Length: 113
Image 1 (tube, rainbow, N blue to C red):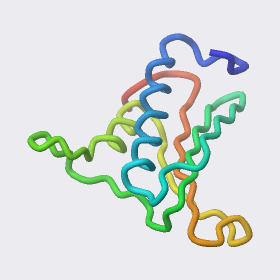
Image 2 (tube, rainbow, N blue to C red):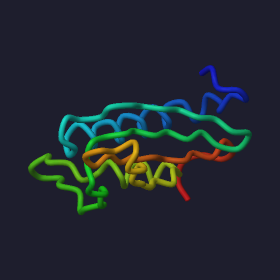
Image 3 (cartoon, rainbow, N blue to C red):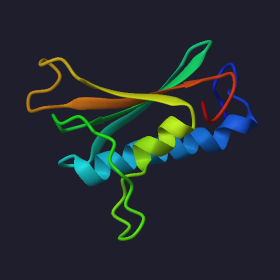
Image 4 (cartoon, one colour):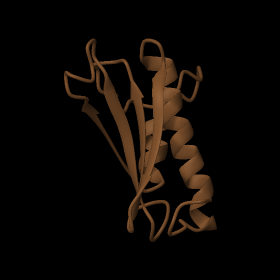
């Protein structure tokens, strides 16, 4: 709500869901869970970054609609118009494997492609 310029109310729920999915992925799949959540704005985008202690990049998988074991997070973020990516942090910062999972959300437009 406090980004400048504001994203607009039509994007608030999308951004909250994308943050939730990135954090949930770090909690479920990275040892020790997430260590930081960072939101950065530019004139055109909102960047959402979750840093965790894994060296393994997340990979989309077929969602499990029967047993409820997940697999939907990256697909949801993508469907909401986020560009999701991961990057290893420099060795100085990551003594034992540290990565940042991030999503870039454009200010204009909205969900879908």
